[in-house]
Image (cartoon, rainbow, N blue to C red; front, side):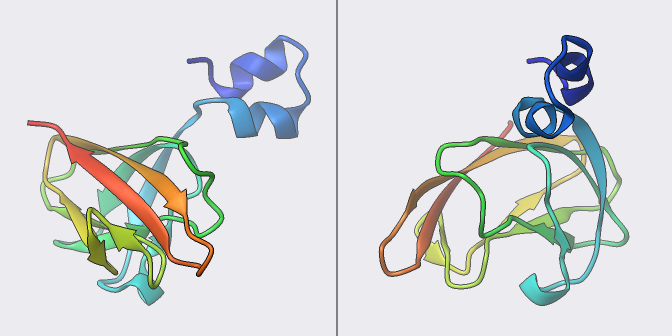
Length: 125
């Protein structure tokens, strides 16, 4: 998949290219709860936990069906949170831990009418 820069190079407007491109981003994980976690803003994220079990939270404005690719190359685990009251793999306010040298794919399965989003996550072996 092309990056946002690739798409701009082909003449696409920058804002659209950023939305459609697969631009990698390193994210410093912070906090140990949804309220203090760093916000995941791109679909291709390298997690950089500042210490064990610090985390990042997916945005409530995420689009249904858009995959979020995560990778943790650090020596400590990172935790991924879903927005408050959302469901992850069947658990309300669920979390997903990504250990060192592991990758994960998360996506919003559906946005419910009652405001409860449902997410799914897969971890590499």
